[in-house]
Length: 437
Image 1 (tube, rainbow, N blue to C red):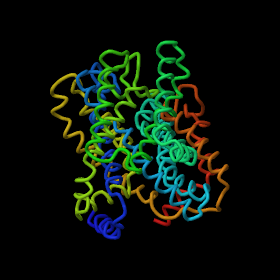
Image 2: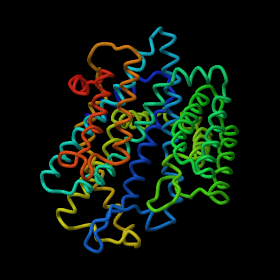
Image 3: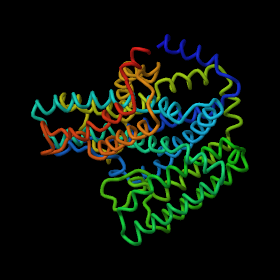
Image 4: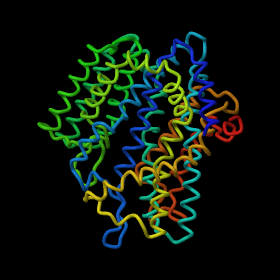
């Protein structure tokens, strides 16, 4: 670990003064919130003799308010908008093409996930040969692969950055408010007109809208205490109104058994939460940037960001492997998730999950470093590859790698193939990255 810190410190020392370190810090902070939130929420239980892969949100309803803090996907898209705006503008100034810009982005985003999927294919084959029910394999893998839904949506947002950035440059905040209006119409059609299919369009309207806020941040539209407080107040009033007077639930993540989910597909409360997070976090940007000028917090930020996709993608797989081990040993899963005792053992579980994640991060973190390999490809082919990969990731996040009657050993082979086919089209070669790292 000392070697990792030393390398991070060397990188941190070379950081130019012009870099907004708060962007990197928020990315790292978001990862930490996602990891802790998922680990706390997971509530596997063997009461009654059967394993139940449940959530704390089902057993203790007060915990649903905590999702207003731990649902940090809006911060990811906010930070993504800032970073993509900076990099796309820089690419244009240096005469780089869309293909050159996109190639770098896809390698960084898709490379690490291929290793995760390959491991889960091996686990699926092993469990299938061992006689484990394909439906249970599907449930386990779906729980572990929850993080890849974000990647599927985010990559699609990245593919259209030239369009969204052009809209921002021409129309400014109107490019945000038009998407807000579209999201409102979409929710009305979903909830009032019962056109549930159209609700999936809000994956585009809401997350692209938040991505536009990242452009707004970069250009100073949300900076400072006064502006940040105004955005937070607007979002907070809308959020409280929607969950108290409207049809929306309190939880910002899906709760099994709830008729409506604010996140699957995303709905207006998620957009309101984005305004709250944006306003609160940007209102303290000044002092936070001064604090990040110190060596220790900035080195820690650099260290986390150096393996950030690996931590994000593997944290639930690490937890799933821990849960599987406790099942084999027959210990640890008998505490009722509705009891106070369940909370008393949470620190121990978090520590064990963290220890299981460390080797995953060390083993696969190198896939985020180094140069990719292969020929340059036209932009349309890169975009097509990214789209195919995203389709596979979305389907795997929704239903896992296996299902009863799906195919050999219950594996959903054609779905599993999509991310790899898309990566080939996009020229993503994670093995080349590993050798380079």
